[in-house]
Amino acid sequence: MPLNRRKFLKKSAATGAGVAIAGAAAAPAQAAQASATRARQPKRYSLTVMGTTDLHGHVFNWDYFKDAEYSDKAGNAMGLARISTLVEQVRKEKGRRNTLLLDAGDTIQGTPLTYYYAKVDPITAKGGPVHPMAQAMNAIGYDAAALGNHEFNYGIETLRKFEDQLRFPLLGANAVDAKTLKPAFPPYFIKKFHVPGAPPVKVAVLGLTNPGIAIWDKAYVQGRLAFPGLEEQAAKWVPKLKAMGADVVVVSAHSGSSGTSSYGDQVPYVENAAANVARQVPGIDAVLVGHAHVEIPELKVVNEATGRTVVLSEPLCYAERLTLFDIELVFGKGGWEVESVAASLLNSNTVADDPKITRLLKDEHAEVVAYVNQVVGTATETLTTVDARYQDAPIIDLITKVQEDVVRAALASTEYAALPVIAQASPFSRTSEIPAGEVTIRDLSGLYVYDNTLVAKLMTGAQIRAYLEYSAEYFVQTTADATVDVEKLTNANNRPDYNYDYVSGLRYEIDIAQAAGARIKNLTYDGAALDDTRQFVLAVNNYRANGGGAFPYVASAKELWSESTEIRTRIAEWVTAKGVLDPKDFASVDWKLTRDGTPVF
Image (tube, rainbow, N blue to C red; front, side):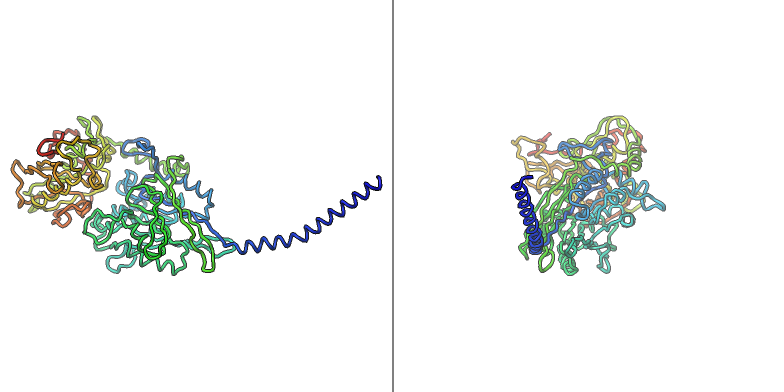
């Protein structure tokens, strides 16, 4: 090898060695500098809280009333099987150990599936089944759920059995023992999240339910449970949670955000108080909202005491949406601090059912499908609720006729047997139909979708008149010369269809050209003007009898009789006994809409 070539190689080797030595010397210094930089950077942690609400017994994307896959005009899909898929996607993305899954109540009522396992094959029976909602929620891995008002619809025994079947707590800080005022359910749930190199993040979930339970399920809870206001109970418990070291406080509230109530002044607490809680009680970071069945991706409320923003979200209902609260925390000298909270929604229509849930509950689903498809009679013609909210429809008259018959029979041997029986009913659905031909349990269940029971109340003619005036506020005032658009004719002041009542056994007109409070015209009974002093027995559902909808006089009226059998069951019994469902046996034109005396239709 030439000398100059040898010199070059030696020089290159020496140079390379020098670089290597210098690099080796620099490496510890760079590592130390990087370590120092990391030490100066605060520890951070990202937590995702997922939430559902108002599941109402929807496990699958199935409409038991139509015996078909669920569908609507908006393209929604529903069911816990879909939620399970979404939850697993989020857990995979965020890391399961960085997530929490909550629910805001109303779980065990709302579909034939939940009715079946409360009444037909009840979970309370000796050796009875595990509730399908418990099976599904356990399998998905919920961490906690708030009590909803509909949890009480089947009585406390059924609720307690459901609670026993869950692998997570049912929370209700404002569900207290009526005598001791001590919590009757766990008020809160705390979970620690491990963070390498830092203390764990402590997350507290406070559960709040609806004060309206005291009215709506009075028969089950009176004297046993009390339901104070959400605001006062949150003010009591949030400081305790902070004192226990909670770094994050999430409220799961079965209460809407509007600040309104549907029960008037019967209870001194607000029904839809979630935003009030966020506004009035310091220390809350996020509120999972329920009860109102509305979609709120993100609502920001400023706390009046601290000036901090509290984030609320409501994921619609029926497992159609999943709320995500993405919470960012930073660790400082004082411990973990919430830096930001952002809320968003995932849509169940973007995923398929989780096969795990499908396999788990396919037998229960098939059993209920078979049950609701039992034939109980034959209809001579098709009956529908399409126009029932603005025209007297025979299909609603079926409800009032059944209620009249049941109450009349119940009072037959009492001192009230001679009093006239009239009945109340509401157009619950705009799509219910009993087709001509075979009538099934699902046809009748679709007509009466709630698990209401029947009550008999003693009322005067004057009180009934006031009751009808209040009901007529449902219609939008429409002058005699205005074009009538049926889509804009009802739901004045956002009153829902279920808070508009027919009353059978009377004849009356509702003059929608008049202002609210002066609309009931030509009110008669038995062909003569209504005597304000005459006594009537009003057959009414328990929701209305207890004050639901804030109708006047009915809640305070004397109760003559009540029962625990659902009105839906009474309708099925009536149709079964008749064999043939013929409008001539129940239909009557009791009321009509007018404008200045001229019929609207």
